[in-house]
Length: 590
Image (cartoon, rainbow, N blue to C red; front, top):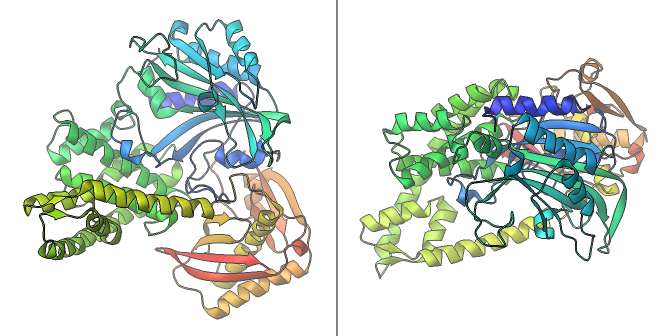
């Protein structure tokens, strides 16, 4: 295997697929636009859903990129050898162009030719078939023709993707693994095991079915290919390392933490875990704060996740005896590391560091408040055990981490009912998940007529906001369901009732004109010169879609109505603060 750095692997991947007719597209924002199902972009395919569903992509039918992603579902696992909250996903896509034969052959060529992995050290899995779809003998046959011998047939839980919601594109996948030196755990040992013998390195998803509302799987006329290779995991494997935290993506950060703390990462498992969590969470915070649609810490949605990550990092920083300002100091190293790859990180360097400092200060104040409440609690507890519900209230109300409650309890001669705390926490999670399911019921591919109308109205509202409040108004994110639109924009103060009414009037005036919604494809440079608004990417040769809707002209890739007259009456239902310097509007169509 070739030992490659992270930058070398990124470039090698993009160059490989560019030579095979793929357009290199930029990473989309970490903050999904018009996708009510997720808070963050969690996979390379998320920003491409409209095109996987049939819309024409301006760059063509073959695409490749490196997509920044965030997943926090397994945040408690961060700190082990392989879990991260932020990661980069290398991907290539066929939008109704090539299919299994080409995708598998190129995977084989890249793994064995470019990365130099010994063919005997590779294994693959394919879909074993079930009542919904047949065994994927086509993929298995292609692998055999290339010389692959280690082929495993696995069930849907291992080798089937999607749909993302209740309905939509889905299909079998074929996953690729590097075989380690670990012996088989049993005669049935396979990539489905968690014994560590097989390390997943790449996944090709073949979206050849559409799941209908009645649960049927219907063959798509134009199937797609969606692939994903995790950067962190791949360079770990290529360089023969035990952990992603030992790669060039983290080694400099860990070294800095050792310098700041005076501790060694290898001296103790708890110290190692604390350093890894601190390094991971600050890296993720840098990317959220530095994103073109970046949010700031708050108590809702993405801002809440960001706040939790920063405060969790600070909490583990306490275990390392890190001084105030450590998050910002480490962030400076990440900014330097990534600013040339992701220019927005460099552009927002000052914002990143100042927001980290501000949130660290806020958390210090929160800890002080929680400390006072803790002192009240211990005065009135008849036993020497702090009830689990009380410990959870300290966490939920005051942001007081369980670990700190346990530390203080021990110093005061108390213990904590951890089982009771976990039960209260679990109950809270169930309620939150139930609420999230209701909130995000629109589904990843919720391109219904209603959402298309609201999406179109969002364009008109954006332009109206600029006319009423000034050209400095910039979109900071949006979330659209079939019931309402939510729009975040950069603005320092609350809107007045008169300003809200004027925005409504301007939008409804355009709706009454019943203008056609016109879509044109052009380069980013042409779009900018034409006066279109939107996020202008650094790759000026890229083709984009520009929608002209009444007085609005904007770069966009979402679903739209055919005419403004279809929208009905536009009404703003709420205007409020989202985070520092960012306002949030909720609106409906009546």
